[in-house]
Length: 293
Image (cartoon, rainbow, N blue to C red):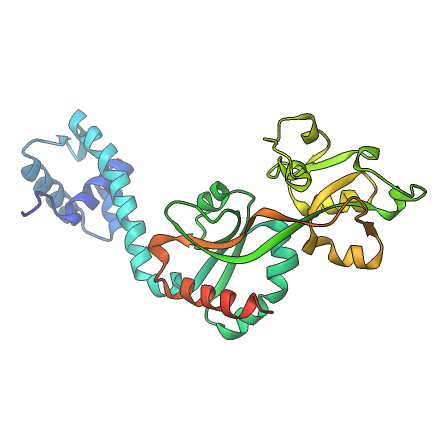
């Protein structure tokens, strides 16, 4: 069925006159003659079957109907322009990959490997944003993201990248002089997005609201690692983040062996991007090359 729509030129002229308040200024902005703008306004009035302006000498005074129409037309034209520009630059857009990363996982695991992807795909530009939750990455409009969880995010594909073990650690300086330290001897550090980490490590049932969840809280593991190094307390941390500190003796894990985390790290992306060339390229590299790095 044919749509009942006025011409785009008529709408552009109408919107320009409403915005500038004068036919002459609208004509200059549109690179048209005054008579051409006036003619398009008249065509639009004929189409909608009512006057949109009162004509007083050389001025056009908008009617109430014109103001109401302009409130609707302006945003629609702006959105149409944005979407048209996206189509015009589609090839360039498809060469920019917005990658969402958990701060510590990104800095300690993925970024050291990322040169492999840029070398293999020099035509794809990477834009990195950081976040802690699924909502952070959705809000940032990421093409792909590395998230921690159970792999179940409705509307998103998820590919397992790395499983995780967690361990309770304390600084060697803080534990000095204590031959048989217990976690109860130190302040407990926790992370906001892992409130159940202590219960998970101890193998107990806890929703993160008990006394075991008390203590200084941090936004990410990088900050918590520095706090443990500085002797602020004991923390449950992913073993892969503190392996070097444990091997070098800066941190100790005297409270028990590492425990497998309930969650894992996944590469995720919206279902509708599953066939995007840049997403497919990054997924294949990350799963086939980076994971085995």
